[in-house]
Length: 194
Length: 169
Image (cartoon, rainbow over all chains, first blue to last red; front, side):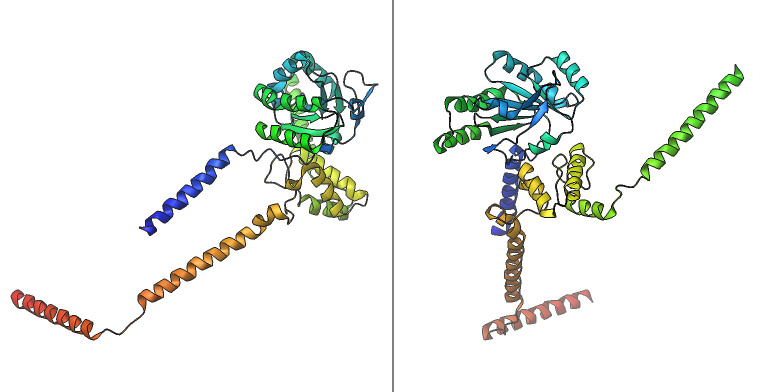
């Protein structure tokens, strides 16, 4: 009897592993930057090349940094979501134009609409490497102290925006400092996202 | 008109040949002026995972990001950074996942010890099975009763066999 049960048990264990594997996202590598200060940068602005944008300018505000490029196909998918979000004006959205040519980038924004307060030009992709960017688009949520609190890899969906990004932004907006209790709340909210 | 066409065809052909020559010249271009440095860069790159094509090292991959990261490695090596410096730099940005050789720490104990556990488990099952088989096949002397039974069976068989033989004839 046992001899016939063994293959059956092995089958169910394997099937269990495979079933869990269906929901895993091996492409989404957990970012080591969560709850760490965002790497500093100072870059030219896409629409006024003489002016610089530094993430230090954003201290005191909760904001989103969206890494995008005109050559990035998945960016088209998330773009309407970002445009809608910007229209509602709930959270400032800044772009990091990653490894793109300014002309292509501007044309792309003219065509699809520009949801960004401004876009910083990362022509060589160095800032991208500093932020651990590996799959455009990526979106970082940065708090008032300039600490990265969440990262979305891949296109942002409406579902992700309402269930994940906005709750985190609202939590962050509620407080000036992130103490351990607040961190616990944030971790809880982030868990619900994935 | 005919001459003209011929002339254009010649020009096109020449262009093709020149293009071919240019391509092969590009392939032959050396990677770097400093082979020592290039060797070091490749060694380090072979330990780093390309995050776009996750089962390749950045040494093998031709993804844009892999090329960028390799350039970054080259730059750092040129600045005199050691292998550990470069790996730390990458881990800081991309996490432990970027290392092809994961570090030994509580979350990776199972990963490192797992194969040996499986091996030990396999050996245990093998030994148990071998023991069982030996028990089954050991020759134990027959008891008095068994001996008699055996003989009576053999006897009756011989008889029936003999009868059969007799009938056949």
